Length: 421
Image (cartoon, rainbow, N blue to C red):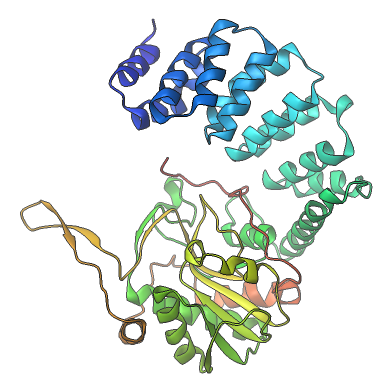
């Protein structure tokens, strides 16, 4: 038994699910599916995933069977472990190279892992069996997500109008992404590390700030773990003002969402933007809707999905690893893990011990006042100035904000970042 497998079994026998999954993530491509399936069965048993346990057991019983491998890969994808699905589905596809079902599930696994270039490669290898919808659409989509605008455009331009109306929203999303990508590229954007340009192309939104932390160590402008503060909230609102001015947008009101953090930020935005504040109403036009974190607005995402005329949705902190159900028109920053200014915080005492500071339970009005009193000290790159942001927004203003729906974009796109698992 090799060392990778030995360590994996030690973790499995200790019942360390998270440790085992992290270990498998880094070693699964070096191990045989027949060796990892029993480990995954153990994880599934510990977590109560009976379907995955059954599928893993079937692979152990028939490690060369394409049906067992496919069912196991499918179960891994369904349970959020697509990295485990990839080698199993690859093996299944080698045994049934013309199977569209296996091919599409493998592409799904690649997409879940942001491995869009590999999705393009495997689709291209099976070009003879591709149908227009969904296969060539998937080829166009993954080409764009891997940064190849030209390949994506060629594939998209060759797609016939879908006979099944199910694919109409996907057709519209892809068309919008490609139009914005062409616009951004005409402005000299969309380099391999152009996070702001690609964020606009894929989501239609403006990314107001770029993180300076770990830029050259794999973060490329995104935050990983962020302890947010009141000054950053004020800075984000000032950046929002810069965006509106550069785009020539003149909303008449600020729309307030009911969550305490959203309400606090909205009340502060009203002062920063010099606009009257009103409770959010679906369909209100010419307004800026203010959210701290769209993951926490509940059922209101349904009302925010369709854009009203002149309505701009602002989100302070956007999670890029688990994107919200709707994409904001302006995001202050992209992060993976976030502690809001009013949340309980961990800190290190002078003695080196870990301690917790209590949550700030003040009312939204008091939190808004705290935001307005704060010093807006940005964590910005030297090149990420107000002037640079304004130049970008002025360039894309004819296409911003977009019309129609605010679609969720599940992938981080072509600009990679290091991430916690």
